Length: 500
Image (cartoon, rainbow, N blue to C red; front, top):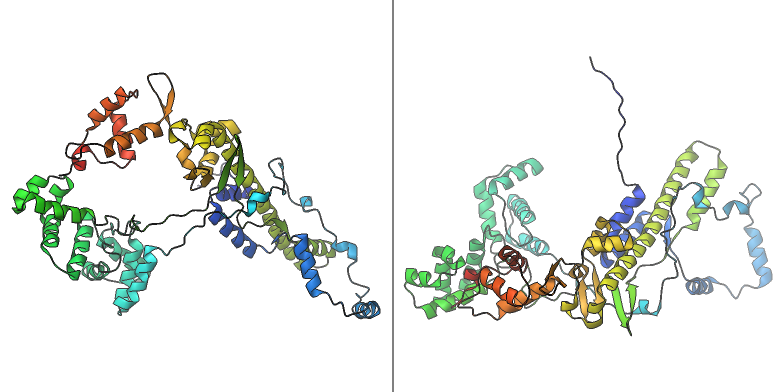
C-alpha cells in the first residue's frame, strides 16, 4: 500500500524577470540588438518611443490644409460616436503597477542617458557565412542521390568547429537510423565522406591531423606534382610520428634524403592549415563592435555604453487602453481570456524594459570598477601597468555576485585610446616579485613570450631554463607554474620548438 507523506523544503529559483535579466546580461551589443528586435516582433505591447520631432513630421504629412474649419466640423459630425460608446475617460492611461508586483525599482536608470558621443561611428562587425554553410552549398553540385545527400548533411552537421569528423562512423549510422529511420552502412558513409574531403576548404572532414594534412597535400598534387610535394607526402604517410616530435635527422636517414632537401618539404607541411574550418591568419580580418568606450579626458575617464541602434522602449498605449476597456466591460466570461492575454503581454513588456535598464546599470558599474582598478593602463596603454584583478575583486567593489561579473566579462569589448580589448583581458592573477610588489601574470607571460621568440631555434630553452631566467629577472616561480603559463600561451615544449 502506498503511503502519502508531506515534506517541506526550501528551493532557490529565479523569477521570470531575473531569468530575462541574466540572459540579456551575457549578450554583447550586436546580439542584444537582435534580441530587442525579436522582442519587438513577439510582443505587441512593447513599442519604440518616438521623438516629438518625428511625431510632428508624421502629423504634418497626414494633415489636410485645404480643408477649411467649417468643412472640418461637418467631417467630424459625420463620424460622431454613438451614445453607447465607452466614455472618453475610459481610454485614459492606466497605471500598470495596479496588477504587477514590483518589489524593487532602485536599480533603474534615467532614460536621459544620451550624450553627443552616442552618435559616434563604432567599428562594425564583419558578417560571414559559416564553413558549414559553405559545405552545404557544395552538396547539391556533388551528390544527386537522396540517400547520399542525407548522409552528407549528417556528416557536415557532425563536424567540430575545426572542421574535423571526430565521431565514429558507426555513431553516424545509429544517428541516421534513430533520427530519420534511414538504414545505411559504414561503407556508404565512408564513400560519402571521401567525396566531402574534396570540398573546399582543403582538409575538411578529416578524422585526425595526419589525414587533414594528407588531404591538403593531395590537393596540391592535383595542381602539379613536384619532388617536394612527393617528399612531403612520404613524410606525412610514413614518418608522421617522427615529424610531430621534430626528429628531422631520423626522418632524413629513414627516407635517405639530404637534410636541405628535407627542410623544404618540412616548410611546405608547416604552411598547411591544421584547422581547415578556420580562416587563414593572412586573410583573416577581425572587426568587432565595442560594448564600451573609455576616453581619457585629462585624467578623468569618461565611460560610454555603446547604445548602437538600441531604441528607447515603452509600453504601448493602445494595449493599456484595450486592457482598461476589457477590464471595465466585464460583460462576458470570454473577456477574461482577453484580459489575461493583455496583462501577460504588458507584464512581459514591463519586465523587458526593466531588464534592459538593469543591464545598462550593471554594465556601467562593472566597467567603472575595472577602469578604477586599471587606471594606469587606460592612461598609458602599457600592459605592464595592468594590476592583478579577479572577478571577485570587481564583485566586492560593486557589491554584486561573481557570476554576474563573469557574465558581463563574457564576449564584450571596450574601445580605448590604445585599441579595442576583450574585457577578460583585464582580469588576471598575480605573483609577488622579489621587491614584494604584486605583478600581473600577464606581465610574466609577456616576458616569457618575448624570451621564447628571441631564443635560438636550434637549441630552444627548456622549462627549467625559463624558470632560472625568470628568477634572475625577479620572478621566482616553480617550474610547473612556468609550464602552465607556457601552455596557456599555446607554446609547445622545447623539443617541439626545435628547428634546423
